[in-house]
Length: 119
Image 1: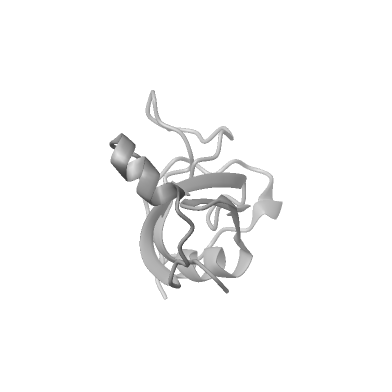
Image 2: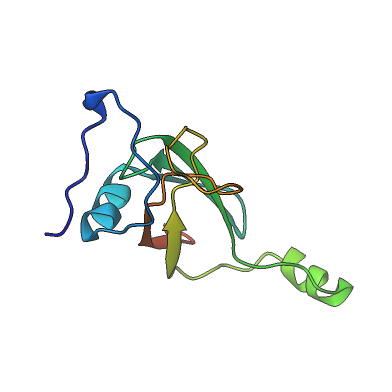
């Protein structure tokens, strides 16, 4: 295993660092919840696997580009189970020392396999 996931009990905010670890994906997969408020939109919620701050990440699978496309999307069709690999990053608003101006999060990033569709 590479870097270990820090413990939130130490009381000090983690410094901003653009870093990944294979454990981040496992931790996110075990703790994130997925909600589908409408077809084509997922909301992922859970703690950042590095800094443990709560996050909410929307994933949109498509956009409407024309009236014809809108009509096709409005027709109800069963959607097959889909799995996608999504790049993820910490989006928390917590303070992290050394974070560059205009950035957010603690710098952690990972990929997550997300399933959507009928269950």
